[in-house]
Amino acid sequence: SQMVGTGTALALTGTDYFTLNTRAAANATETLVNMAVPAATTYFAMACGISAPPGSGVTRTFTFEKAAATPSTNLTCAITGTSATSCTVFPAAADAVAATAKVAMKEVVSGGTAAAAEGTCTVFFNTDAF
Image (cartoon, rainbow, N blue to C red; front, side, top):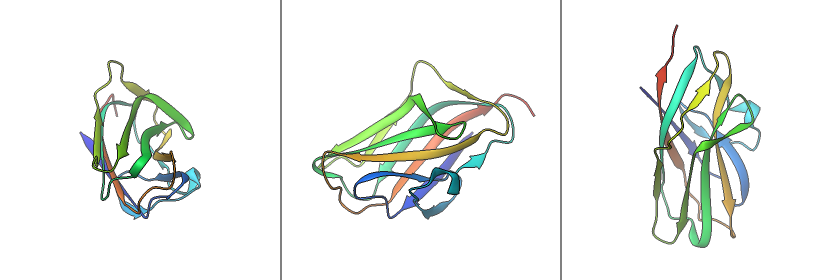
């Protein structure tokens, strides 16, 4: 299965978050966009894209946040420079998330001020049990 979330008006600098399963403005406060997982779930891949490249020397890093403010060390990818607009990751280890844990996407800009863009991430998962 998959969940797709789009953060509109991503931050030009710093960190912001957006929810999965909808298209809405990105927010600097994770608790305003995270969502509860209804069942134990294993997340095993991620793909992200942006509407405009970040810019010369600038990187947008996308990270799956599991269990409210706990970043995944497995599901993270970066988009850098003046031409790249997507990234994917298929890690060796998946992320297990307990039922009722809250998840979101985190986006961090580094290396300067990024070009204005919206970002979309798709996370792929298996529901362990209902």
